[in-house]
Length: 190
Image (cartoon, rainbow, N blue to C red; front, side, top):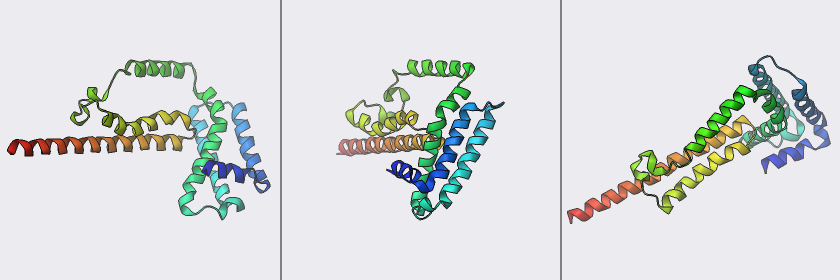
């Protein structure tokens, strides 16, 4: 919803200069050759910061951005820019050594596919029940969704959601295990 609202504002004639500047920046990413990879990151970061400042000051967003929606506009903007520049960034950063490392990483992940909750040696997750699968569903979905996001902020937010989901799942499983243990102790005392 926020992303579509951002695009709607960006397609407004009043935002033509802003949209043209974003378009030129994304096109120039393809033609530039950078000596060092860090230069690309610095350019992207500074462009996003300065353009976001312009968005906040722009008449189309100035009145529409209450404090709680400010982050959604920023996320939408970064997703837009990184989404349009992603091919250029990937072509530049994904060189042969990086491709080899990525292939090795994918092979390692593939070899770990057999691991289940019982392998983690976490007592409260030892049972392979439907409940355990249900409480781990949200963190797994968060992890799987990381690749669908373009901006680094969104990727980090997805990883944070996974982390929180794992903590919540472990807390639920631990509480269930403690409740079961306490109930067993009460039964044996009787």
